[in-house]
Image (cartoon, rainbow, N blue to C red; front, side, top):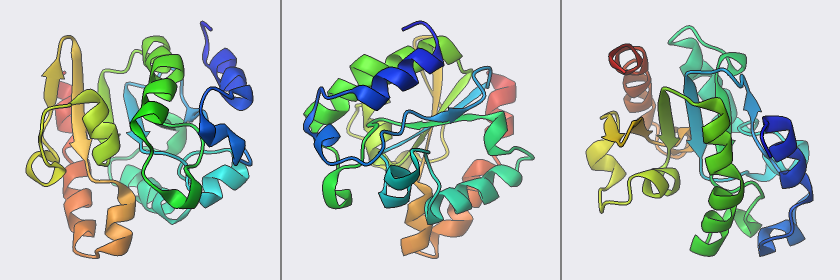
Length: 184
């Protein structure tokens, strides 16, 4: 698999973990293969499972709003998740599910896209790349360099849907993205 289309095809037919058993559609990710920004969430929700696209529900609408605050659209970035199939009942993905999807697909997507900045959305994505015992509440909006890659952990857009006070925090953190990208 040396291009995003091959990865998307492999994701669509993958049966390597139990998440494949109940999915409607796998959700490999979408956007610009040449993007400097790669957004990585946790996993597909119900709307994403129905449509086979990442971030198309309420959290996705807020993500689009956040992107617009920095003059970007979905087409300007690449958006994916650590797991490519919806966990039943929107439960947290299990470590073996995250490991399987990350090893088989996500790391290959990163290698192909070669983003300057990886933006993790939520704690599951953050822990995959920044496994230290940080709490997202302590590190959101602060860039981290690991080897040659820069990561920016942010709250998941869904957090603002459940806690209105998080909305402004996410907006403020998003406004840091162009500055971080400029320094990279």
